[in-house]
Length: 574
Ligand SMILES: O=P(O)(O)OC[C@H]1O[C@H](O)[C@H](O)[C@@H](O)[C@@H]1O
Image (cartoon, rainbow, N blue to C red):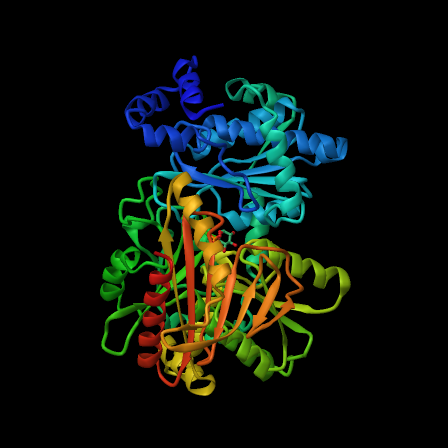
């Protein structure tokens, strides 16, 4: 059906909530918007779906949420009575309509006689992942758009292992969802009836308690924390979201007693009024925290994104200013600390594994190699790290030490199978205590690591390409880059190209198969000066991501080189 016809159908639909009718009228004045919002179904991929909170089949609203939930219900029913009985856990974050959408999903699943565990209030993504495993549920749903701006919402789906759903099941959910002929009349059952029938069960504090007990096991040196944590003042921000629910108990129970929330950002608020995007990779989100840190004489600010899967940190520099660390730098400090700790205790063994992604820093890999442990690099998406954890536990062929992605995601203990900002915050607080005990700052620690292993520095940039037009442009650009086989950049020779879609590795005129990972639209370049570059369309936002990682003798040279390469990539992507 043409975009215009679908748009008209929505205009004529009965019972459309007021806010959607208002938006239809306003936004519908723009033919380009109609084309984009009604031109195709919103994609449901392995990261679920994410989009602007607007009317339209290519947007996030009660109807697209309803349709995909119907798809999930049909998949669960196809799996049989046990899957129905095991049920689905539903969580949600602090965004506009998150709770409405969660209840709507509960009503649809309930109408299919699928057991539902619905959180009584907002909760972190990793707690949902944990709950799916703990309750032996057949799936999980989280209504969240993670760190996106306030205009967005989304839908993440989890499999029985607590990791985000794999490609096979995701495409079946999408296929079932597409079979829904009338998006406005998906069958629901009333919440009160589902409650009285025992189909819908509320959960909350009961899960918090067991999840917190698990979080207690994350820190590795309680003696160090006991001796030093009282000297460490931590400023914490949940960025208006779900981290608020548990941070206080989590820090305290693990021995971090000097933790102060940023008051303005500890207010749960879908407007995210203190930020442009509630994303802990940006400096501006830390501004209120820096003010408080100066008042409290604190050196460390930790922030978690609204669904508390990403964790970022901002630390005091020598001249008293503050610097936001990258996800790669945080991971570098963490893996180094973990390995030193294991070595000191005489517990280091070669079967420990570090799992990371192909677009993350090479520094943690270097450190892991130096300490003699194993590493594996997987595609972007924490579910791939989850798969490796599964492999280790089933095959007994490795001990999981840490998983990380440059996008501020970390995991240490596999009771959750998605990145866990609570685990990240606790581990980073321990790293800061370790350096405090040595009278060093976290930045001193990073410098020490750089002196030992060379200075790695990475910059990731996201180049926006919105709408259906943007999607076409990304496809064209990736095709063009594939056909060009880049020979040099900024005068430096490209030694090797890895094409993860064609599964080929190109060295000069030789083309070899690239094995070991599923197909993915990623190009990675290795240059003669130890630089690596990667390009890929994001799976969660309308952007192409450009990753640069350089290795230089010092940080000034590294900064400069990384910026220069980013500029060169920006030219390529014009
Ligand atoms: O780079 P993207 O495709 O936007 O993905 C960025 C991130 O998105 C989600 O949050 C996934 O859970 C992460 O594993 C992934 O790293």
